[in-house]
Amino acid sequence: MSSDATPNSIKRVLITGATSFPGRKLARAMRDRGDLVHALVRPSSDTSAIDDVARIHTHDGSAASMDAIVSVARPDIVVHLATLYLRNHESDQVAPLIETNVTLGAQLLDAMSKHGCNRFVTLGTYFEYFGEHEDKAVNLYAATKQAFSSILHYYQDAAAIDATELVMFDGYGEGDPRRKLMWAVRNAMRTGEPIALPDRTVHLDLVHVDDVVGAIRHVIDAGITGGPYALSSGKLITIEGLVDLFEDVAGRSITRTPGGFAVPVRNPDQPWRGPQIPGWQPSVSLNDGIKRFLQEDVASED
Image (tube, rainbow, N blue to C red; front, side):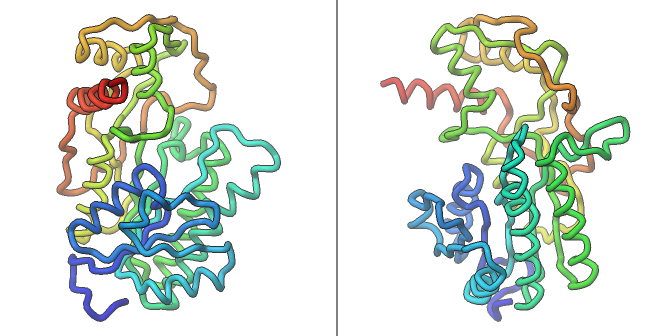
């Protein structure tokens, strides 16, 4: 660990997944408050959005490469956001899922233990909590996240890694390049094309990216460890309710196809409602988040 670090005042941070939507936001926020940001990326990663924010370290997949990166970065804290998400996988995608979601993190923890870095924050998924007792994985992606959690617990016990586990349903916000549900609703409003509604009730817990970043910064600054904690908006909404809210905010109607989307059998229709992050509350309501999301849409059409 670097000698200039003081408790709850991070000076050097290493972020994996820094080229992702939340990763870019976090890297810039940490840089803007004066931290020295390092980013661990794949050889194929497009780093153009963070080249001016972070020192880039390319990981070639080997333990030796990881060891060298941690040795140079000397992080006071590691924020592990890198993940490979596949709702349904093909046989040739098994190895990439394990390499990204299990091996990468295990190599990282091992290198941290060798170089005296013991502060670690990671982000899990509600897909890890399925079934009557919330102890099953929805898919192989979630199973790899569960496997990594077990590995993390080993390093917590054997190498005194001081870790915080957060679990999130989904994030959104302006500038999100992913064509997910929020984009689909906004697109249906703009184009007039119908949006397919689910064939059974599904509840959402949508967190604005500013609050995702704020929650991570909070657990770092407050020295909160343990978990898993729910990175939650604090309010659930159905998909139908989300479409209603878009209509209310925009004052425009959205064409719907009731029951047009078949919800997968293995799907948690209620997001995991674990313990909340101590001392943290979201600051962006879904109503305000939709307003901002729609303003971006208007600006893009000008």
